[in-house]
Amino acid sequence: MTDRELRQWAERIVELYAGRAKMTLLEQGELERDLAARFKAALQAGKPVAEWVEPANAGLDAWERSHPQRGTRIAGFSETGRQVFEKRRS
Image (cartoon, rainbow, N blue to C red; front, top):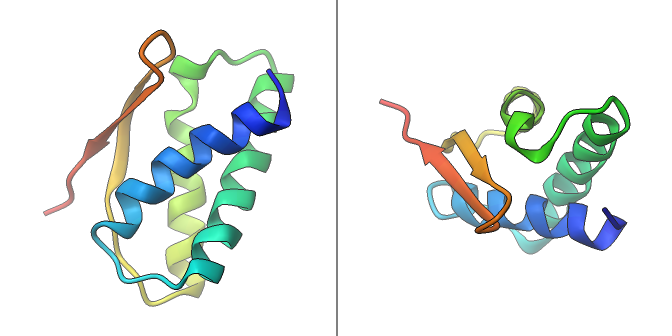
């Protein structure tokens, strides 16, 4: 998987997250880069896309510890459909 593909997965998550939390474009880019790096590490550890829920949510948790936003969490991935499924927080 290329770096661009990793970034596209991160972009999908940030799009969902930013739909629930107000973020600047710079913040979105920062979060995308962080998530893409987490996905690259997961891929290098042998984890398929379907198992990226933990690194995705860990990245969102880390983001919220240093930023005032509060957004969605990830419930799952579909690699064949290139989809990200969200888990709404109550």
